[in-house]
Amino acid sequence: MRRLSSKFWMILVALAAIALYLPSLGYDFAYDSVMQVHYDDFIHTPRHFADVLSLRVLGMDVLDFNRPVNLFTLMVDSLLWGKNPAGFRLTNLLLHGAAAALLLRWLLLFTGGRLWPALLATLVFALHPIHTEAVVEVSNREDLLVTVFLLLGLNAAAAFRPGDAGRTWVPALLTVASLFLAAASKESGAAGPVVLAAFWLLFRRGKGDSPRAWGALVGAATAGVALFFTLRFALEPKPSLVFTNPPHALAAPGMSALSSTTTGGLPGPAAMTFFPESIAMRTISGPPVTTRSLIPGCLIKASLDSLEGSATVVRRFRGPPAPTIASLRISIVLRETRLA
Image (tube, rainbow, N blue to C red):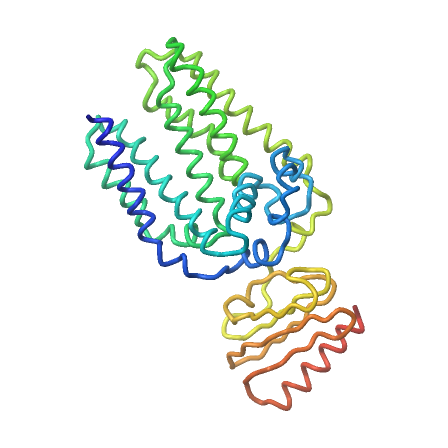
């Protein structure tokens, strides 16, 4: 009865975590997900499943090549939903619900089965607004994935009982696999073996478990995580355009900024992109031509057409003084195009 009751509460907290973010299903893509899902074809090409599953993607210069688990989930979403943002966000919500359920299950182990302390702590985690960006933004899914796999590994470790054949190998393999997948979801998964060792030292040492068996478990988990990061840095493409073109400031606060998309970059030739002031202040320049405009004292939205073989056209909708700004932009665009 207690087991059924705990499952009921796990489902309940998962539903509560999901329900809180249901309005986000109506949002469009934003930030990195615009490039990764809406414009880039990598996750929409089924043949790349082999590259991700074999870890060959670690040597490919694509966004999130160092996070293959995240890429895999995005590719599955692409098969199911195409480019519909609601489907991608639904996966985020399900992952958040799974993390809340796994956290409740783990906390119940340390409260002696007392429900209310564990439930209260889980609800604080599930409903706290600090998780909004990770849950709502598709490109931040790696935070949800690393949380789910770390909690799954800790739950498996809690079931690890050295000396009991039925409760040794399966929990051990699940623990090692979960921590490996956590590291392959995001770099913060490297903390997995440390958390596992702390779990044994704080909660399981001196309770009849073999220190040698737990040492072997922690060692196996550490070896799996180390193997992934060894492959990740050994296979990293050099030079990598993803890492050699970091975000940089195009304008100071209080000033508007515009950045064009360029031939050969994302979102690609002849694409129109809008950059509000808050986004244009922090963006990535795309080779070979990027136009920049700084206009103090006014808030401007502009559309920029990147046309292959010709100057980038910039149209200003508003902002004084119109003749001066227009002539200055034309001269800058033509000059940068000739230099390129």
